[in-house]
Length: 400
Image (tube, rainbow, N blue to C red):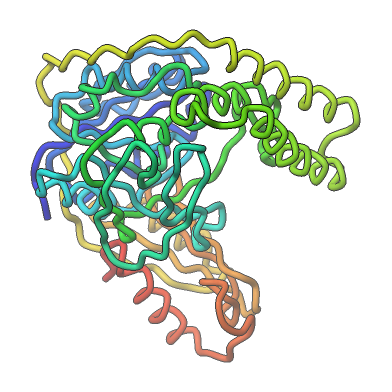
């Protein structure tokens, strides 16, 4: 395990409950030497301070995640900076695994894998992005290093990535022209060196509601997506046919909106408003005035580390009728990374989540799927099922 100092930056806006859960999970990291920087709106900062942790807090209340990340970067003291979103929680081994590759001086960035809303299926694995903003999935099962070029680079995800601080400062950090979309891709193409892909560095990401999307993932506006796409192409692919690019973007987003309408999530009026916002955003992106991003200044504040480090694991397992007792017991445990298995005598698919009280909870049927692979029903004993699930999770967190 690397013990080099790390700065972890969490950006949050108007989601204090999610932010608190994210922070609680970060206090269970096995990395023993990192500081936590919270960049959030005033209410988020106030609630964060109730945790009585040695955090660096930066008040920021604008709808621009690039500018918010730069604000966190400005006070980061470590030579490596990692990023995670407020609606995500990290496995206990996340940070130590994500940052281990920086022992190689050629590595300037790293990224890991992301599990989705059910806590088991993957939301994101490995991918490269090209100068046209197009993704190219990679088949990666073991840690790998790949070079970055101005035309193609590993695409890091903002909720699970790390960078060598001086390299990020030297290119001006994140470009505020990208309020939330293609912001990491822009950095990836501007950053030289190698990017490490670490499959075992995992976070769980839930896609909570925000000013840009509803809880059911319906977009509230396409303005920033369109503006960022136009800016990205003008910066990285000046030879691109912008008319064709707008048509492709419109077709893609129209299909997505139509699906939401067929599902009854939006009406005709909302559909028209979304398409109008796309057109307006594209026009803004075409009119954007480019300016060179000056190098950012290095922080002068000292490292303010949390008290973390490896903890033992503990499993609590039982049937659904034992829920109250098991969850109360899990809440009371603070010295171990606790995983609760709460199963029913059914074939229901499993779900896994981190609870605000500080423990992991996996629910589902004894006979149901967890990984969504293989048969939907398997005849198995309770004891053997617990053993199988414990072995699966032991790859990412301590298990008793």
